[in-house]
Image (cartoon, rainbow, N blue to C red; front, side):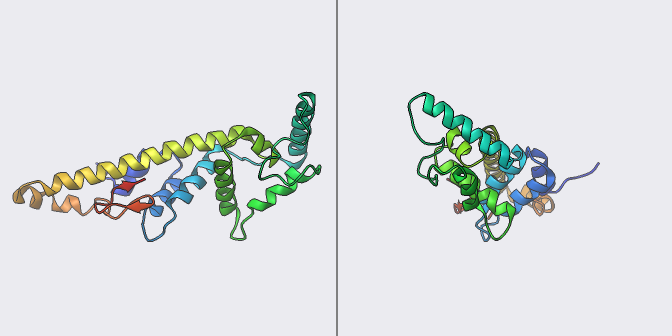
Length: 199
């Protein structure tokens, strides 16, 4: 039968498209220092388009402001630390603070990081013209991907430890198979001495 490489085996266990899975596996190279950012990007791309069309975003802000006034509060929704005042275009214009000159992907990473840093609040999303349910889904997907990668890295570390404990004859017999094992250096963030995930 067909024998998958370690990359193929790992891709099959990641709940994202093969292209996003390949990006995540490549990001585990500690020399790249981008695993956390790639996790966020894969999560947002898998969750759907988080950005509301301008007309819908403006309508959402106006609806939220009307509800706030009925409750006796002034200002527009999402007017916390990251808002840009009470101007009618504030929520729509403020979206531009996420823009990255390097392209849309880094813009999405910036957006996710800001959402996470601001308490993952629905009103914050509305203030920036984002879909709260898509951002929440992205948070769930990111957590799932993080757990999946950790499990794969931990399994690989356990496999290496098991191989190191075998007698010389068994080790020699499995040498050909070992050549297709993932490198010990793969990690998310900082690495332990055995290449395992360190949070």
